[in-house]
Amino acid sequence: MAATAIPIDTLPSINPATGEVAAHFEKTPPAVLPEMVSRARAAHASWATCSVRGRCEKLRNLRQRILVSRNELADAVVRESGKPRVEALFADIFVALDSAAFWSKNAAGALRSRRIPHHSTAAKAKGGYLIYEPLGVIAIISSWNYPLAIPLSQIIPAIAAGNAVVCKTSDFTPQCGALIEKLFLDAGFPKDLVIVVQGGAEVGQALIDASPDKVLFTGSVATGRRVAEACAKKLIPSVLELGGKDAMIVLADAGLEVASGAAVWGSYTNCGQVCLSVERLFVEESVAEKFTTLCVEKTKKLRLGPGNDPSTDVGPLIRPQHVRRMSDLLQDALARGAKVSCGGNPRPDLGPNFFEPTVITGVDSSMKLFQEETFGPILAIQAVRDAEEAISRANDSPFALAASVWTGDKKRGEAIARRLRAGAVMVNDAISYFGIAEAPHGGCGASGWGRTHGEAGLLELVQMKYIDVDRLPGREKPWWFRYGVDLERAADAFLQFEFSSGIAAKLRNARSALKTMFRDHGL
Ligand code: NAD
Figure 1 (tube, rainbow, N blue to C red):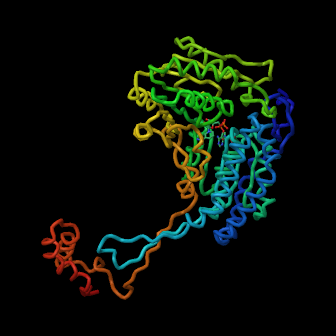
Figure 2: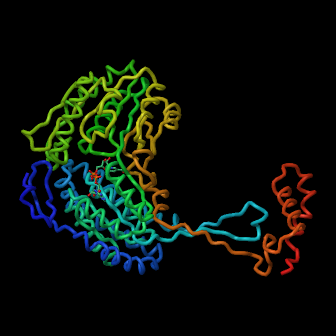
Figure 3: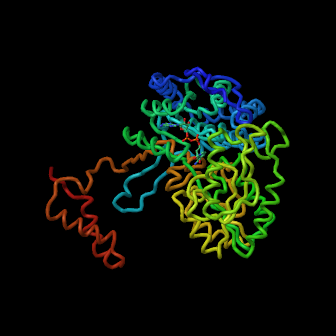
């Protein structure tokens, strides 16, 4: 690859299908990050005074800009991430458009102030409500695998909530990063409201060091740990969207034709480089052979090729080290008794980063293929006795991002979904919930913390403020000074009045309890 000839202050935009460098993009010097964050902070100050409806108006312009530019955007996604163009349109462009459409309609409702009724007699004389204020400057640090969908579906709610954003897109996808910044300027957003910075780890670190008000990080577990440490040192809150090792459970009563189609798509879409990929497949023993045969038949029919060829089903991996990793994972599994049913080889004849879609059976939890995130086109199948074994194996992982259950019995599917340790479980579908704007996304354990998308994701981007207004401003509160035996008795009576279960005890204590309201404080 020509990467060695690249000047150090630029980032190459490399086509993973060919290894060719299409363009160079200027790296942001880490030293200017404090200035970038200050500029975003200044833009935030006036943006936050704009009404939510005014902000949503601009989001409608953005949606229009994305729609008009969809071809240019899809081309950039295909060129830098390698995925087939259909996937660029269905995943990256769709998610970006839908996020703009959804928040332009729903941000005002979601951010409306909310009355908080008080249940306690002690607080009845007060009216309370919640308001949601922007946090300030949100730092977004992103992965390369959905170079538009992920950053845009985080930036859009962040600015809808009144924040400014400094976004570090991945160093593998600098052209997509540059296009994101341009989209916001073209849509008429104020200058510096959305700043994209370019670079690798050093720019990401400098962004956190520049003290943004929150960090939304999407990437690997190893980097997530470093980001969490850097944020902790500065007490900056974070959302971490990290890796996944999603289980797919196929029960014997599932429609095997459809479930095998899902397994194949869920394992190989974006060449398996999806945090929500089907990485561990558990199928009930009684149908395992038939199901595996269907998966193998479907896999063999897939066409491997560059993303800009409309007949391509599966594109390349992102870089040569990812190809080597697939071979290592397979070797480890084969040495421990697994069997490759189809695929299993790099395809240097097609380009530097191609690897055949692979079905492997007899995989178990002793193998790296079931322990570590694969992030490549390998469908790893384990036959299990029954649903109980599937559930316990699925839950036996440090990752807990998402999962899916396949069955003809929806009620049973939902019951199993409740028992799986994951941030989201789909019954009879996989991955696609990421494209539902209302659905919160995120996991726990090694998959990170916090949420993006949906109302839960929006609430990560605001300061929730409780405002309380006293209805009796002319009165001193009963619990204020001065104390004494009488007040102690009255306090005890109040507790019995408020918390006794019998009506008699309540009535017995009501008088003394209420007396405190009108006592003379004597100060
Ligand atoms: P990565 O961890 O290598 O990089 C992610 C981002 O962090 C990049 O922009 C990178 O430049 C930056 N970075 C690297 N070191 C940093 C540091 N020390 N401080 C700050 N920033 C730093 O991940 P990747 O290879 O780009 O993405 C693949 C990973 O992302 C996979 O593990 C995948 O599962 C995960 N992912 C998760 C989700 C999710 O929503 N949970 C979505 C997509 C990808």
